Length: 198
Image 1: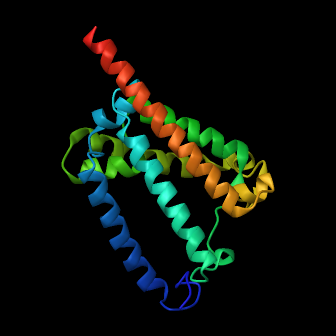
Image 2: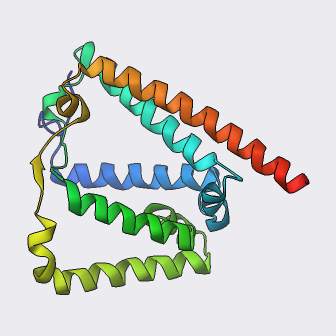
C-alpha cells in the first residue's frame, strides 16, 4: 500500500475532513500538554528564557521530514503526490513578518491561540476573535492587495529544487541546523538564567 492515501482514492473528501478533525484535535491536545496554550511560555522564547517552543517545533519538523524521506526511499510514499503550497516569495515573507510581530506582542500564533481558547483562557479568546476579524477584514479589502498577493510567484518549489541539492543531503543539512539551534537555545537559556541570578 502506498501513500498519500487520499490521492490513491482510499477515502473520499468527507472521510478526509473527518481525519483532518481528529488530527487537529490530537495536535491541539499535544500542544496543550507541552504548555503551548500559555502565552507567557510562548513569548518567553523571544526573551531567550524558555526555548521549549523552538525545541519542540524543530523536533517535530525534523521527525516528520526524516520520516517522509525514508518512507519515500522504501516506496511507501510517493513524494510527487504530496501537496506543496505554491510559493509567492515577497507576500509570504511579509505575512510571516506580520504573524511574527503579532506572536511577539501577544504570545500566540493562530494554532496556539485556538488551543488557549479551548482551555478557557481570555487572552486566547481575544486572539481567536482577532483572527476571525482579520480574516473577514482581509476578505473585504482583498481586491486592493490582489496584485501584491499573487506577486513573485515561484510555483511549487521545494528547498532541494531551489538549491539543486539531493533530497537526502537537504534532510541531513536541516538536521545539522536543528542540532545547532538546540545548542544555541541551551546556551541562550543558561546565559539568561545566569543574568537573572546576577
